[in-house]
Length: 316
Image (cartoon, rainbow, N blue to C red; front, top):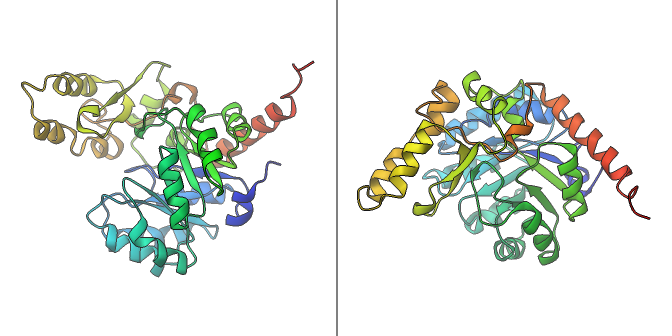
């Protein structure tokens, strides 16, 4: 069985993280992934301290396995949730949308393994200096907020740039991609889009159906004008947003910001995929059925081991 420093240090069966997806990654999904042998993550999003605490307590009721919390550092409640993860004994914190420097000492002293998401080698080096246990190198194939570099280009460069473990993310939906990331030097992977259709994922069925029906060219990146590009499934909403985005003479940045407010929640929690935004990575078309998290994880690793076992069969 594939085993690395990641699952050994975190005391999980498989070196796989479930992405901390906003309005998606709740206690149910995190516990489902952790019970299946991976590391489930609760998305703190813009939750205040007590809202996050309630979700952590719920997750503890659903699993006795390790799980973590993803903290969006741009949240107005970042200070609150930074304390809550310490108070609740969370073992792993992943971070995004900002610099976790002001919290690192507190988290590390509490025994938390801090694993920031990074889109570049420069940020990876900075996180290593701050004491990060590992970094998640996420390529632009991922859903949600994306960077410029692809996973294939980013992961080996980050591996070469730091002396801490590197977890690959972005465009990973099956065992072949998992095997490729390990060959690039990563010691684990973070998967988001495929877990959108896990049985334990509580998002609206309409959202899941958009993923299951997606074709290979069905994602688009919006929001570049505002400096916060986001990958999602093409829809009437994205076409309208794109029209506004590229007409700066008519629509202001404030109007564009307002157009994007609340649309993920609308799709994920209310099932309005026409007026809401369905975040997903470029591998959405590879996701073909709804199944338990356990089956997703076991399929990924079974196929990865098959690929790695036959990796040299074409070499003479």
